[in-house]
Image (cartoon, one colour):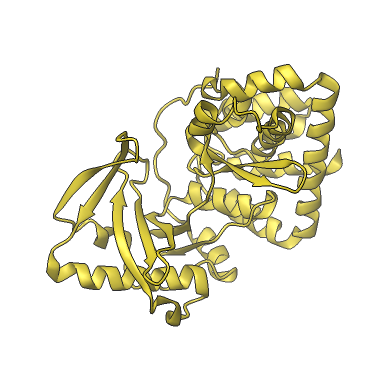
Length: 340
């Protein structure tokens, strides 16, 4: 089973990454920053509809600060969703601001509500961690999912990724009669392949959601990562393969029951072909993000040494052994993908 070695440190945004973010309009000026949200005066535990502790806390601000903070987070929402068009704010209000005290970057989650129809949305304000920013950008470029996020100085703004949390899905939805076990197992194989190729680690059931889309004849599933802190950090190959996390055992067992070895190889090849096509279609952008990664410190020397040796053995390719950092290891992984 996969095990994280120890808590990962937060890596700052480097000049090279900052240049990339500016060039691709990810860096924007924002009216409020992460550290300003830390001025809350009190908090209470947040429970879900079943009275279970969510491990989030709802925070409260002094009257003198609350109005300004709520106005500014609505402006950020307008930047994230409408390119800064403030007219979208007219019917919106901030219903709640929550803090995840156990998270690596201790994110704030903002709940925005439309007072006309009570429709709501979420977004997140976090400490900017370079690993996470690279993870978000690589998800946007190499996966079938588009990602909306913004950065300014040491603050990261992220959209909410909708879906049923993996842990909840496995407990409450796996055995329902309308769940298509074969399609779900196939999607897990493809998700496993996406994570491994682009070196996104720690994809246990709490770090991904399952997006369920009913179609006229069948149900489609998309497994989406929601935590990108472990992008290209760990030194063990197994950390980048969701199939090795015991928390994913229900999905793993599904694959063992319904997917033959021949079908699994077919699905892996299909997913690798799709990723290769994305690399080719965004050739310049991929080159630029890899250039930034290669000039960055994203892990510790022993992890780099261990991972390049394991991947060299896995792919039977000595090219991995020449890599001096995580950015170069990822480049070799993608080059190997295209060559195949």
